[in-house]
Image 1 (cartoon, helix red, strand yellow):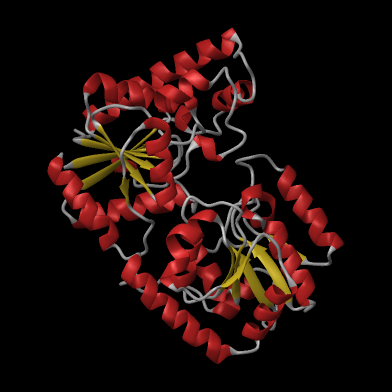
Image 2: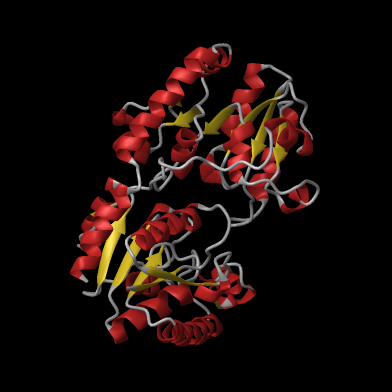
Length: 406
């Protein structure tokens, strides 16, 4: 089959971009061909269609987003803009499906969280009018984010995020999302957790000492890596608190991803907090900061990390946890709801916290850093557990059944 992936962005190291590539890899192993429709893309041009208006950071989409949330009525000019861009994107989706002779669409969060209202509406209209078989892969719903509210926008949300159409099969990445989808919209779903290819060996181009040196670190520095975007729900202030209370000047806190999806106020507050707490914070994913240093891959950052911080308040699943296990590192994890429901019972070894860094939290991290043998045993255990529960066959088996029914 020719399978078309649709999203606002397929680029970089955000969870949707990473997980969609894993799905494509699994589908291609099954003999299918994959194609990409988005507003920003790092996929092969020969199998991609890029329409800038599909990206949530396009100026027109930013104008729409600035006007529709937390209001009771949307200005007429914005309504007209939504309709115009939606029709334009629908025409391009039609062209994409014709050009690549698409047999099945896979929406990657485009029918889930309304980062781009016109794209969700356009995709819904295309599916409804064409009857195109579609898999809606849901990573995080709008009702899980406080900012996506307002009476004015509610009709759009009810129509397309997600739509209730017979030709759509819904896939969720955690059990609570499935329950919410059923409770709110009476839509059934299939649970497919995030995965990693535990059969491969990560390719690292540079030695650890080279990476640390190029990033401006001394060889004796201890790197705490938080492999997340700089947005409030990632709880980076807890990582700053942990490093401050460890009181070791060699510990540097590195944040891998950029800010901007939700503005820069949170980033600025973190910089101020780190300065006040005397924590060496490096935002190497920040466009200004990263332009001063060689671009290293996320894999290379994991290689040089001594410890991972993951104090997220909420996650759709927790891709960074699987990456942490894959690269054989240990982490501090805040017990966010999906971790409690779907991951914790599997017996992975992490330092955990419940919403705050306590003296016990600091003690456990300090003891681990002083005990390399304990770390080695823990990461080996975690790798084997995750390999059983989150390997590629967790994608290939349900997708094979799904595609056979289509």
